[in-house]
Image 1 (cartoon, rainbow, N blue to C red):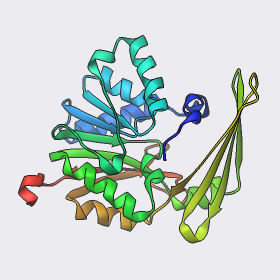
Image 2 (image 1 turned 135 degrees about the horizontal axis):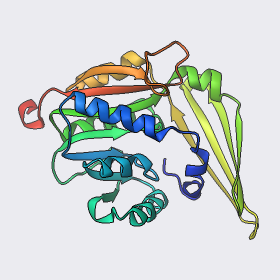
Image 3 (image 1 turned 180 degrees about the vertical axis):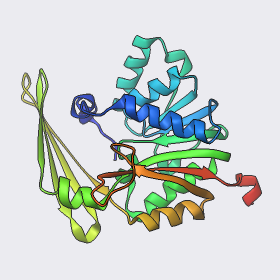
Image 4 (image 1 turned 60 degrees about the vertical axis):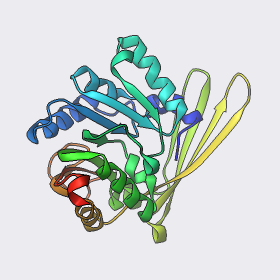
Length: 253
């Protein structure tokens, strides 16, 4: 999935997100496992608020996203902050991730890995992230929980109003496939143009996720609620997982 027209509404749609709290948690987890700098990939960086915060904190960040529209928004933000020269942006599909060398860490937030599914594609994305990770490197990512899809998003519609357009986000829960079908309708007020994007978000049993991490050389070091970063609850809408790479690709081979 790649946001196209919706890229320009993303920040408004996500305006309630507490990026400061997310940044503190991510930086704390990285530091707890000895990652205080070095090359860090933001997988599915989107419009890049967290990407820019990590860059300002001194990491050598590679922002990666499929959506050129998302990357365009991020470039404008980086230019405004004077960070363009310190940030490498790559337009890539995470299933075909191809970096120039190894990385010390990878982060992926705001449901990027929930968009990747179904399961075989999710596994491929983990395998790709593992391939470029140094021994001792940290992979920190979040996932929407089955509870969120069944009890929070199912059947819900969200409306967003911008200066020159309106956006409607509609969710349809498909229990058998453990996914939500999302339809985004955008209407531009001045031109009368209408755009529609449809995609899916998937959920996976937690044990399946942990098994796949272990299969590709990661040890799950911490599991937390992805909203308040405390202990996971039965009604947690999002998990955030810290995984540490146990060996290099050369050692595996």
